[in-house]
Image 1: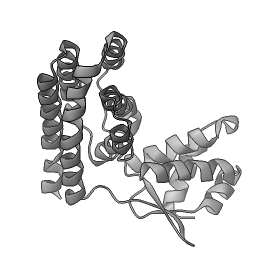
Image 2: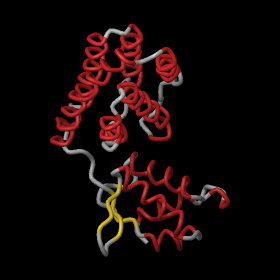
Image 3: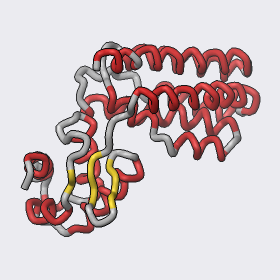
Length: 231
């Protein structure tokens, strides 16, 4: 068994056996990938994991299928699963170009269309997460990543364009961006920018809402782009 499989088994063996289900396997393996404990290119052998953990293949297969849907692992014919690469600089630039086309428009549409209940949901999501993660580890910032995804998904939902919403969801952009880097006050700045977006949408001002979202996406890009200059 490789060192990567030993690491996976060590993490999973800490869970009570009755809890070692697909959700536990999924979150644990995802955390190891996000924290780069399991490096890009590492092969994940189902048979080896099954033997080491003493569980059936079903929860392992289910978790790997979910990770494949997230874009964190790749299934290769006759070879099984391997951990995917992190975003390249070109992929990073393409992702933000896409976001700058879709999300400011969605925020403007949300400002035009959202009703009282919609605006209450948006405010509730903004207020649902106020903690600032204290460590650059997935266990610490997982809740922030989930909130970030929910917030942007809700803005897309309130735009009323389900095709745009589903297209955005398939990028799993927040997961892949947090995989690149977390730290340096990212959460504090992002939460402050979310509040600005919410304020503009609640005012019903589409131009202000679009501008606030554009400023947020551009600021996020600026925070993360230096990662590629350090490589």
